[in-house]
Image 1 (tube, rainbow, N blue to C red):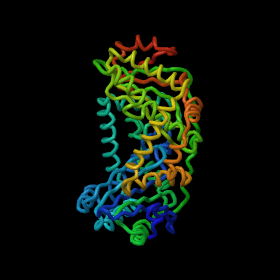
Image 2: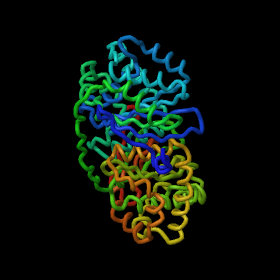
Image 3: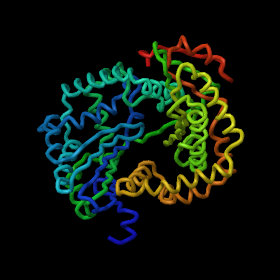
Image 4: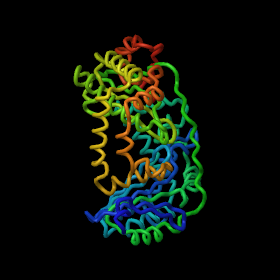
Length: 441
């Protein structure tokens, strides 16, 4: 393999239509494998949210010849680990294994995808586990706040629907629903395989052809996602949970998407606002006032505009003042932008930290996979340093003004409503405070 090939990695498409990306590295005798299906929670039928997640987990439950326990034993015998994650637009099976067990791992993964058992008893078990997990997560205030925030921000848009579903939607899915979902979406051309670590291109081609060559063919169902709409006004939702002394707060609005011309200027601007320990939000909320140990802002990204969200966890005593401070910081951010000094510090931080984001084969593979899944040009990530380093103060200011609306914000918190609802109603620009019980989320 040439020096250029080692730097950029190999890519090919199998005869069955599977896209494969490889980042080869023999520093350690380990291999990471990602099987990414271009289908996820966005494909869940209304009223059966959580179906994609159930279907993905059913793949892990074995084949007609292997029980779920046998699958677990096989993975343990290889010294491997296997996990499944379902997002809005993708389903990812991630595995790590020692090099000598890679053929066995591929054989196992291939059999799980080609001929899953889909036993009704396994589906029932997964449904009960999921409902139990949903109920237990109600003890996690941050999880509750985050789940409610997305629903409040996106409303009826698919981005507001949780991938895990709800207790009612999870039990509504049947074995036939799972079969139909996999029949539609689990096809070779809808699969991308990413591999990083101690394996050569020639060896990997043979392993993939043997394990996945017989995977069902067909056309992946296209995923059309409408652009979410900004919901007007500063709206407050309190998830009422009695006897709270501390709150969990999310404040945000719609942000950016892939292929947005102002994507990188927004990345730099968000770094200034709440992306580092020296950012404005952290300095004002944590450093100057000590109202919340954690304080950050995150710029999500997807095919359509994702959330720009601030997170803090002040006490009941300080929650109204803390949110008022955040609203003032957002106003100044949108109206005035960032300074030249802030820009220089943010660019330096992003460029220097970028080296740590690419110091292993698996880290180098990740942006390539994301670019492949979303159809991004190769330069979107490969020229990251140039993109970030070229952002100007004017570009950052224009990006913030054009994408982030200080007037249209979702403010969601888990708190004891009786203690905080009154002060929250007096926040600048807030016309109404809605309260819902925590067990309704």
